[in-house]
Amino acid sequence: MKVLENIVKEVVESAGYELWQLSWSSSRGQKILKVLIEHDQGVNISGCAKVSKLLGPRLEVEDFIKHAYRLEVSSPGLDRPLITLSHFKRYQGEKVNIKLKKKHENGKKKFTGTIEKVKDDGEILMKIRREEFWISLDDISKANLAYDFNKK
Image (cartoon, rainbow, N blue to C red):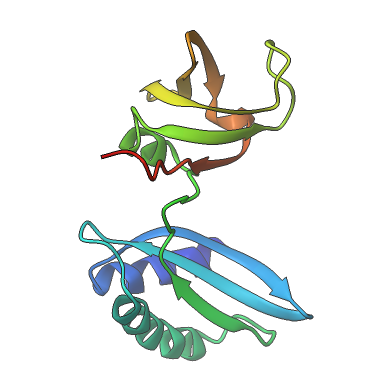
């Protein structure tokens, strides 16, 4: 996966975008290579098409994916997944939905809270209402930005 990630990252960055996430999924027996891209001014359909047109041929030339697949390039969306430490740092002060791999000492496994602080060692200070607690990035199984449509 690292070779694939390096190639995809190189192509995405050469097109002027940031690689947000690379993942495999399947639908009706077909493998899908999902590439989520980001840009400071946002991502539109023409940006996705641009990256797809550059990436498709490059992956064909490299020819190391030995099974049939469909390439899907898109934006991470408003409820974007937060995966890396830099993602959490970028959205410090924002509300997120988090699912932990196992229950936290407060007894919860899923919660919605605000990212208060992010340390370089992977520790994240979360706030839910008035309660604050630390969680480790390694303990998170899934996190998404909880976009607030009412926020001005």
